[in-house]
Image (cartoon, rainbow, N blue to C red; front, side, top):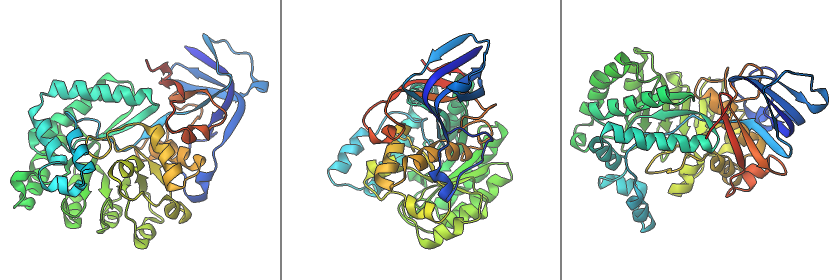
Length: 412
C-alpha cells in the first residue's frame, strides 16, 4: 500500500544516508525540509521532497499534513516496562523524607518489585506490561529496549524474559531484550552476595542463552549493589554467550563502572548522573554510547546527567526514559526531550537527535530506525498543528502528537 503525506509543514531528521550516531557539534544540526511530502510503501519510507518537486505517483491514500510536523518516532533504549504492580506507597515515603537508598535498605525498592513479580502469575505480568507498551507507542515510541531485573531468582528472571519475548511476538515494533539479573542483591543473599553472582552466572545466564531470551547483558554497578569486580566477572561470562553489555553506571556514585563497560566494549553506559572528568575522558574514541535518563532525575530529585560537558567534549549522547515502577513510572519520551532541554541545557536539535538517531544506535537499529531515510522503516510521528518543532519540548505538558505510525500503520 502506498501512502502519500502532503503539505507537511516541516519534515524533520531527513538523512539522505543513514548515519550510525551523532557526536558533539554534529548534534546541533537537524536536517529538515519545509513544505514537504513523504511517500511510504507498506512498511518502508520510499521517498520525500519539497512540495514544489512532487512527481506524479500512483498512490492508494493521500493524507494532508498541512500545518503539521513529521519526525521519526522516538527510540527508547532503556526501559523496565515488564514488572508487576506499582510502588506508589514508596512515593509517599520519599515525600515524607526517606531517600531512595533508605527505602531500598529496609526492603523496598527493587526488592519490593521483585517480591511482587515473583508472586504474580506470568499471564498477569504480560497483560500489565502489554498495556504499558501500548501506552508508550501512542506517545510516539517506535523502538524500545526492555530489561529483566525484577525477578532476582532463576524462575523470576526467566518469567520476565519470557514476557518480553511474547511482547516481541505480539507487537509489530522492535523490542530489544536485556538480561539484568544483577539488578540488586536478594534479601536471602545479603550476607553472601558472591553466591548470588554465582547463581546469575552459572545457573540463570546459561538458560537465558539456551532459550535465546536476550541480546544484551546489564548490571547495576553501584555502591550497595554490584562492584566493578562483579561487573568484569559478569560481562566476561556473558561474552561467551554472545550477550553485549548495556549497563547501569554512575547513578549515585562514580566507582569505575564506565571504564569497566568500555573495557568490555559496552554498547551503552546508562544513567551518568555523577560524572568525573576522567569518566568523560575515558569515553572519547570509543564506540560506547552514553545514555541519559532525565525523568529519573526529576522523580528522585537527584542531579541530571551533565549533558553540556559530555557534548562539549565531542561525545555522543542518547536519551531514554528508564520507565520502571520505582524511580521513573513514566515512559513518555516527549517529557524526556523536554527535560533534556529545560534541565540539561540541550538544544531542541540536540535533544531530538539524542532521542532518535542516537537512541537507535544504543539498540543497534541505526540501519533501520531513527531518521527519515529512504529504505528505513516507516516509524514516525505526525504532530498536531504546531508553530515549530521547538514547541515540542517547550510545551512540556501538552500532547502535541496527532498520530503515530509504526511500520506504515497508524497506532490505534
